[in-house]
Image (cartoon, rainbow, N blue to C red; front, side):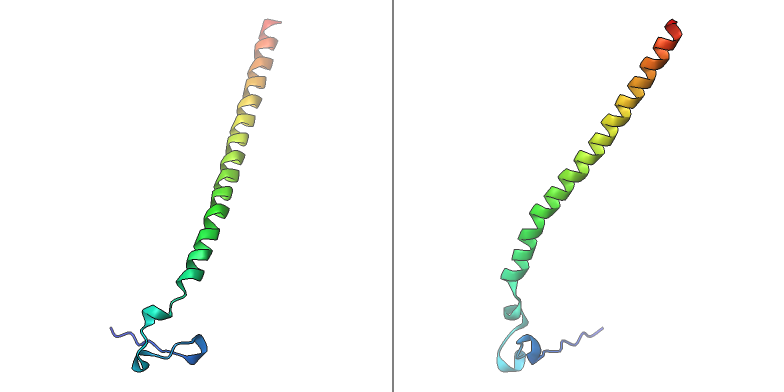
Length: 77
C-alpha cells in the first residue's frame, strides 16, 4: 500500500523538492500547548466526577441507615 503525501502552499509547506522535510513543518509548540492546557481540565473533571460519585454513595448509605433505624424503632414498640 503506497501513501501519497500532498504538500500545499496553503499550510506553508513547500515540499521535499525544495529541501524541506515534513518533520520541520509540524507546529510542535502549539500541539504541546493544547496538550498542556487539557491536562488541568481533565484533572478537574476527574475530581468533580469522583466527588459526585462519592456523594451519591454516602447519601445512599445515610438513607439506608435511616431506614434501618426506622425499622428498629418500629420493632421495639
